[in-house]
Amino acid sequence: MKFATRLVHFNAAPGDPLHPSNTPIYQTATFAQEEADAFGKFDYSRSGNPTRKVLEDQVAALEQGTRGFAFSSGMAAIATVTHLLSAGDEIVADYDLYGGASRLFGKVIGRAGLTVSFVDAQDLAALEAAITPKIKLVYIESPTNPLLRILDIAAISQIAHRHNALVCVDSSVMSPYLQNPLVLGADIALHSGTKFLCGHSDVTAGVIAVQDEKLAQDIYFLQNAEGTALAPFDSYLLLRGLKTLKLRMDAQQASALKVAQFLAAHPRVSEVNYPGLPTHPGYELQKKQATGPGTLLTFRAGSREAAKRIAEQTEYLKIAVSFGSVNSTISIPAAMSHASVPAEHARQIPDDLLRLSLGIEDVDDLLAALNASL
Ligand SMILES: *Cc1c(COP(=O)(O)O)cnc(C)c1O
Image (cartoon, rainbow, N blue to C red; front, top):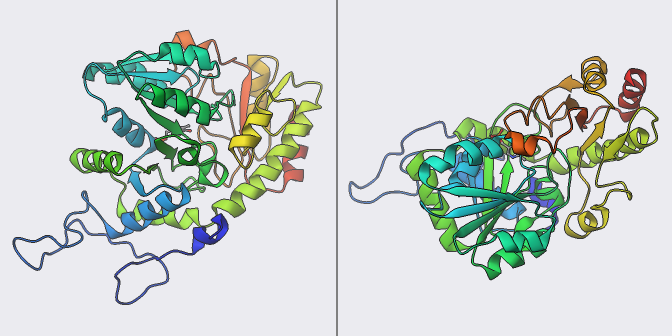
């Protein structure tokens, strides 16, 4: 089955005798047991819920994994991954991380006795040198956000596995449509479901897919023990959004390329980061490990003031921290999503950098609006 087929062709309600064509919302906390000493398939929704299970199986299939897990947010999924480690273990992460991940790594997990070091994971030798015997997890995003650097997932996975470390790839910027980290050798594919999987800015969610059964059992244990799973209604919304993932991303990606080309040619714009432009340093690697460059791009406006004016005055572009929605959004990462990045990393993000997430509007309207505000 090809990806587009799988998005809509799956068992929507396994075991339901009425065979509904859409997944019902099993809005229940408990499931009555037939016998006092034997559980049925489901007993308590924190431990398992039929709506969530359909979503989790779909996530596993789309990432070419064997098991999927849905959490109440992307951050809940990331926190769960860190809980696979024990006090004294260490993490090495690429320095260009989502602001929330930076905050979790820099300000929270130290309390549990974990330490994190940051490297430029484009530099494979530097990465390998940073992997001491205490390193149990290599944590990366690709493309990185907001700088849109491309990291070599296969090479990084090989290096990590040589040193018995797990590899977690936050693939939110790509979605399972454009990139499958498990196929490239990573152990954990993670997404903020709030972004492309949902696609409509109406739910926060996080998902994880894995291939290894032992790892799956450990993650399931944490999901149940910590109570971080996604609610039935939110699982339903995510399942609904997912069906149009390919249609949405094809349209958004086509617009992103046109907008990137327009910005690259505009005299007011000093730098455009989009892995779909042949001038992007990661262009070839991106073509090798993903099936498309995605729908996010960043560009520099020349000054903080110019960036602020463009963000506030461009018609159709809503100022919002998130991305991946059907609506185009614009943000200033240094002031918004990445404001919580520690100062020693913040210098990496220029304050005149604007991030555009292209939606499904007519691209001619977007180009006209950008042209006017520039
Ligand atoms: C948004 C985002 C997250 C966090 O997800 P939430 O659903 O907001 O908790 C993690 N990683 C990346 C790359 C993101 O863009």
